[in-house]
Image (cartoon, rainbow, N blue to C red; front, side, top):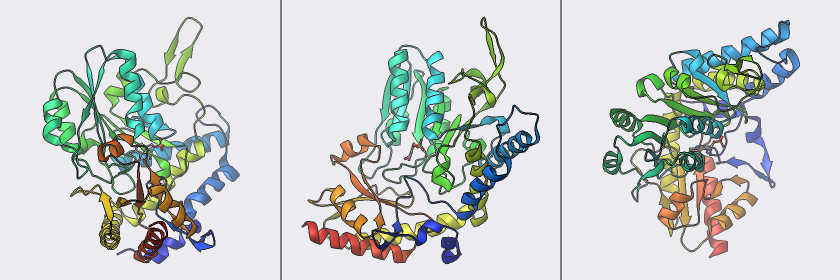
Length: 404
Ligand code: PMP
């Protein structure tokens, strides 16, 4: 059992008033709030060991380098990567996906296929579209059903020896659907395709085991798991990271440089050009420690309670429709109220201190599927409460009354 009041006390922002009202933060899918340990660790880094890493012999540089590499090790353990050098620091999920999609430009040929799911965030569509434009490969979409689940029998049919990459999210940001990624990975491997899992929305709720999953790439952002913005992870299997060319050229990622030829540094540095977000990388380790102390099983069980309670309460509202009713889903409720634009509800409840996301959630194809302009998305985290859900439901009812 989680002591929610104790957990809430770890998050200074949760006591804030917004527009004169107590903040209810239900936009965790966009970014999580940060506990004091993470905020303090950022200050501590800049006050005590700030220096550039991997290049200085001086003490501060060594301390910063050590802290950065310790954090890499924590992330390796957390996702159960085989080697620390399979964990690449990036600026976030978007950067990680672009790095891989760009790498495949040297591999794909005309007629090859990249399978992407209908449930993707734009970050896991556009880089692959750009890759297909560059190489003449074809982007093929795994369709979804009305519940917001992937149609796996269609996925089976789409797989062929033309399939070179399969890219799907672990959990959909717009609907909360948990995808059957183990099945997808195993099936894709049967035809020799590489599989990228966009874990951006999964890592706040569960602990992925990349060896058990056997995915080729697993990517996520630090800011959705209590870490700072501007840092993320690209996990890649060693063989793929060796095979793919680096994404960016610059300092850090080279072994030797002359005007005739440059040789690349070994992993992970080959994919880490330039000065990284050092504080962010170090503090991502702090955030992961914090979450592991709370425990992902506890987080999941509690968030499931919030999801069930929130769903039940929202469905009391006449004309309210929830999009994304998959059997397996996380604590995301995407909904609309008949005849009312989601943006209008979002604007009114903001005045009441409630933060939710409204719009297409960077997943326009999902909105097109349902033929809607967008939804109101409430995404819960382990520091939210049922009382906050009550406040939210009352606010939505009030907004509905004002707008009807
Ligand atoms: N994929 C998914 C499923 C996401 O939810 C997000 C963030 N909303 C991204 C990718 C992009 O993450 P970032 O903006 O941190 O790069």
